Image (cartoon, rainbow, N blue to C red; front, side):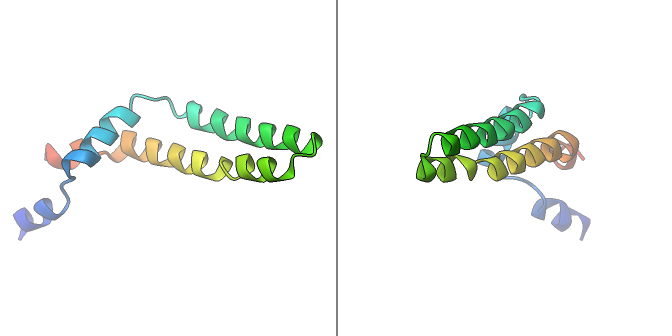
Length: 84
């Protein structure tokens, strides 16, 4: 039963590649990208470019989610399970 559990928890090749690459980035990158998107959206609002402002402003949440993913990969990435 234990081997079946471990087999279910293994990541595919693409997930491993993505985790290896994203774990190289500091988590701050995603935080600053989010702040940058919010700042750009604010400046575009001041410039009365409403549609572009809304488009850029929607990037903030995904950047923060990527940051959370990055942190989880660093703490609990595939290598912890695959090496077990």
